[in-house]
Image 1: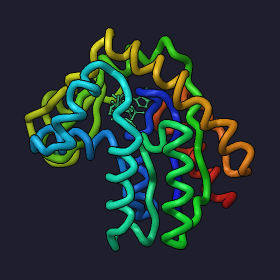
Image 2: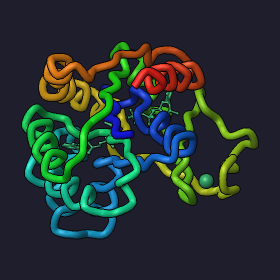
Image 3: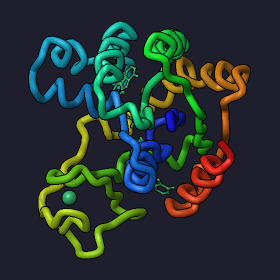
Amino acid sequence: MKLILLGPPGAGKGTQAKRLEEAHNLIQLSTGDMLRAAVAAGTEVGVKAKTVMEAGELVSDEIVVAIISDRLDEDDIKAGFILDGFPRTVAQARALDGLLADKGMMLDAVVEMQVDDEPLVGRITGRYTCAGCGKGYHDTFEKPKKDGVCDKCGSTEFKRRADDNEETVRSRLAAYHAQTAPLLPYYESRGVLKSIDGMADIEDVTGQINEVLKGI
Ligand code: ADP
Ligand code: ADP
Ligand code: ZN
């Protein structure tokens, strides 16, 4: 199965992608995670991306398309993947169409997670992840069962993203509406767009996505 999760920052793409990975044996392909790894490693791409990401703007199409193209050449994704945070512009969507055609792959569905803007600010400013295994949490909406201890790996170290502050979130939302929302009609016209209610609670959203997947 080859899926795209589409939605603004904080819509729940990463949360649901991780759940789908486990339940359906798919691989999450998050350009945000790949870029953050490049920033942490101090690569040439990382150096270029750092300031753009801190400002809440989009990294160039050229950089992210190159990253995804390389990743799609690896063997582990052959059984299926979930794109999380890519494509984010119509140019990226067109490039992806070309890459998939070259590699003989087809998209099964683009799942749009419909959410209101205002609650996203609270979702993002309350977001943190386990430093050990990467599991995502939220100060209010998804706390570990035992305070300060990761449910999945037992780590007691957690981290927050540099760009998860209110000011940057506003820029990221503006970038979504201006540059990413045009992907909705793009995929709608190709007959692959499925929309779900991303305002429901986490478990319910997973259920809605599973319903969509049953139908394809
Ligand atoms: P995205 O990958 O789309 O930016 P995340 O999956 O990281 O979003 O979710 C952002 C934050 O909101 C996380 O802290 C997560 O725990 C929380 N969250 C995700 N889905 C929901 C939901 N349906 N209801 C409430 N909080 C959620
Ligand atoms: P979120 O889902 O919370 O917005 P991501 O982890 O997907 O966050 O992205 C974080 C940042 O990385 C974005 O604000 C942007 O600067 C950069 N980025 C990630 N994916 C892309 C992409 N496909 N195109 C351009 N920039 C990207
Ligand atoms: Zn953990």
